[in-house]
Length: 133
Image 1 (cartoon, rainbow, N blue to C red):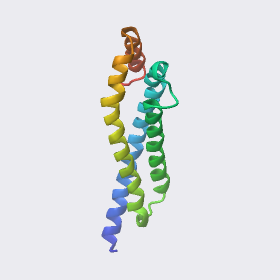
Image 2 (tube, rainbow, N blue to C red):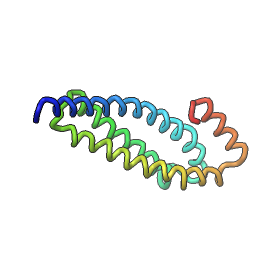
Image 3 (cartoon, helix red, strand yellow):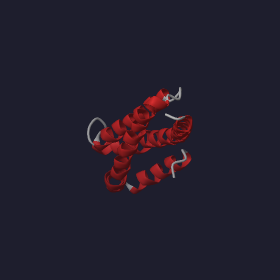
Image 4 (spheres, one colour):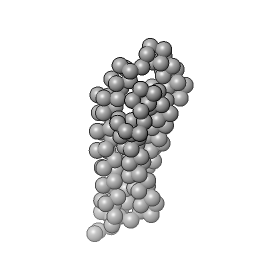
């Protein structure tokens, strides 16, 4: 591999790492608010151990696992493993694309139907105070 190609890979991997670190912080914040506010309220009606809440929490954990593997693997810029490491970000992207689709089309409509008006007000207040908007 010529030197320019090697430097391009190193720069691309570094840029992906930087973007992933930023995204990871946002994803953790998103997951914490869902798990601590929305899921807690919904679990009163549908339980927590099985069903949509369990699936959503599992997907949060899986996405964080993919990010952690990528970030740990890119602490040392090993261009030989760049494609393999980047594949974890692709897997995370595919998982979260499906996850967010389920939120919009299953979880949020379910919450809309399950929660009372007072609970929805409480949910909005808690979400707004934790920065989820």
